[in-house]
Structure formats: structure tokens, C-alpha cells
Image (cartoon, rainbow, N blue to C red; front, side, top):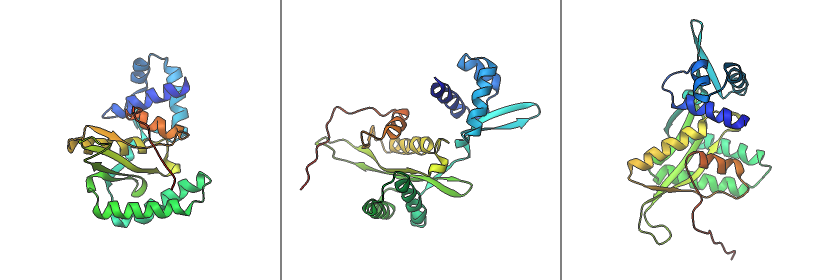
Length: 215
């Protein structure tokens, strides 16, 4: 219930062009002002939202409005590796191979990939998240252009602030500009948070089975 209310508040704030007052949130959520005010303060303490005060009025906005999305370049490589290395350590995985693979993939995408599909998220001039994508013109024997999200990373200090959602939404917009109608990615079964993230962007399970063989 608490998660649903917080998601509802974030959805309203993210769809608003400017800040939203407490009374508007209460009316749209069909909840009392007291209940909404409680959730606003909790989410503010968690760093998910903040407010600007105009006179006696508080206009609430989500923190993702402070997130700037831009194209990535080779000078971002060290920051991308910093973010991913931090994620790997927090997953208690010391896989050097993963970091080497990430570096090789990132370098290739930055040098040869489509700049529109390599996006970074900045807060106060610091890279806090990134996403790399590509378009494949032949996938699973189907002659259709398919967008793929290859790598996504958000600094753990900035997770829950709308960084990933803003990166994902912008990347999907860029896929649409390229007349791509389907976008796919691969997620491990146990990555519940990541699955929830992609579902929030509108992704669903495919009627396909991934097959693998060790050789």
C-alpha cells in the first residue's frame, strides 16, 4: 500500500510541468491532506522529492527534474566504470571479467555506436547514471528493426530519484525517432528490482525462451 501511494505521488509529480500543491495531490489520489503530507515528508527525507516555497505555498516536484540527460563521450568512460564497479561491489561480486567486458563494450559503443542511443544522466555536473542501446535489423529470424537496451547503470547513491526512469524514457523516445516499434532487453530472473523498473517503462515478458549452451 505504501509503495503504491509513493508511486502514485511520483507519477503525478513527474507528469506535471511545474510543481504540484498538497491539495492537488490529495484530490488526485483521493486521500486526506494529512495522509498525503505524511508521505511527502517521508519521500522528501529519502531524497525522492523536494519542494519550492512561493509565499506560503509549497510546490512539490520530483528530484528527477534536476537530472540532465545528455549524450555520452569517451571522456565519460572513467565515470561509467566507476558507477559499474560500485554496483558490482555492492552485489558482493568481485568479477573482474564483468568490468573488463563492460569496458570493452562501452568503448565500442562510444566509438562506433549511434550517439543518440548512448545517454548519460547528470546531477550538478556529475554523471550518476548511463544507458547504452543499439538497433538490430535482424533478430530471431524476423526482418524488423528491434531496439536493444544493452547496459544500464545508476549510482546507488542516486537510485530511487527518477534517474533510471528518465534515462529509460529518453532512450525510448530516441528509438521511436528511428521508427523502432519494439525494444527488448535481457534481465536475470532474480533481478526483481530491475524487472520492476522495466515494467514501469511498459516492458512485458516475451513469448520466447532464451536458450544457452556451454562449450
